Image (cartoon, rainbow, N blue to C red; front, side):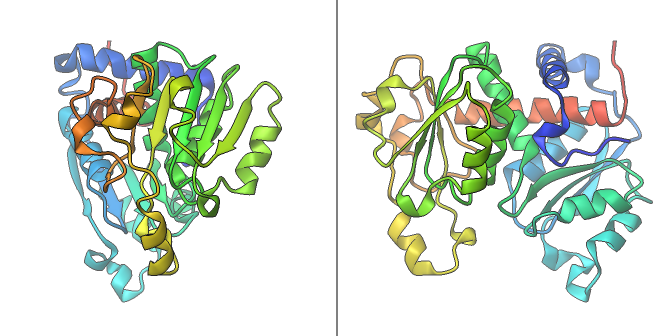
Amino acid sequence: MKNVMSPLDFSVEELEALMDKATDIMAHPQKYAHACDGKILATLFYEPSTRTRLSFEAAMLRLGGKTLGFHSADSSSATKGETVADTIRVISSFADICAMRHPKEGAPMVAAEKSSIPVINAGDGGHQHPTQTLTDLMTIHSLKGHFDNLTIGMCGDLKFGRTVHSLIEALLRYSNIHFVFISPKELMLPGYIKDKLDSHPDIQYEEVTTLEEVLPKLDVLYMTRVQRERFFNEEDYVRLKDFYILDKKKMALAGPDMLVLHPLPRVNEISTEIDDDPRAVFFKQVKFGMYIRMALILKLLDINVD
């Protein structure tokens, strides 16, 4: 039985196969409409989520399966003191596969160790968010056709942003990628991620504080929100939340083929005035996310569709 805790749980070849499967599902949805008949996905979400939880549920429903679960710790037995380990033992009796989001880093790993069904980490604190990374990779691969030789800008909360950390680690396995990290000094990339970058001599990166100066050279811009829930005091959050706002004026500086990605939800770091810009692909990204999760569910349940 395979669990998914990190995007690195898949080899490059397995990632390619997952993306190929997701592409086939997009092209031939009816072929997969009953692939998971009789199967149940449990969504155990100990913190709020819209896209990730509903994306998993939509993925399973579109495969013909069913879903059950809870959407916050308050609506689970966690309020009575039940441990993650005990919860997953119970859920394993009901479901065939589980997606778990938890504010504590490592909680899905604890669940995976005690589970008799595959567990997918749907986000654990500021640590990993592997299915968002799969979504990001699927979006870039589908719209750019490759990962090698790209200049990728990451902007906003690079210190606490688990989506950023996961995506960097996944992209380190490709060749000649140039990262540009754009953030205020307080939200710069943490040292342990820089150490990983430094261990790959063919990967270049630079750190800047101004978005405008680097926009012309980017192939992909990955925007993130400043996350209130990761801050210890409101003052710091208020001071930094509007540090970068991507609007029409800034987009005019970017190349005609630059893609703008965002894991969502956005607050005000991307102006709605660029929503109709063909380079703004964050809503397409959501749809890619559903299809890659469909492919992932099939893989973990070992279901083959010819």
